[in-house]
Image (cartoon, rainbow, N blue to C red):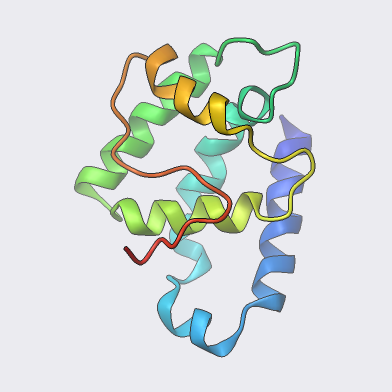
Amino acid sequence: MAMAHILVLALSLVSASHMGKAEEDLAPPFFVCRPIFEYFPYCMEFLVGDPNFNMPSKRCCQHVVKLNTLALHGIGPRTICWCIEVMVKGMTPPLVPSKIQDLPLMCNITLSFPISDSMDCSK
């Protein structure tokens, strides 16, 4: 999991350095993403289709519940969407759309935030 944290930090720094002025005005500050950067990596192996992770881990599902709470009663779904997008944009391997759809079913939860690498989070 340490590798995932290093990956997240590196992606965050690269994304921040490539963000345009218009995006900066619309995007929340990076410190707001701290909980997403902490919780979301536990689901990455499953979401990228790693063959060793055909099910999301228990910890992944627990963290999705925490992210749902943040979406509903904290920083909101748009901010979570933006933070996830910053984290995974251009990542190799990319998120697998069918795994994104499977995640809430396998964790027995309804997502209150979108997961994507290319969604307009302002809508």
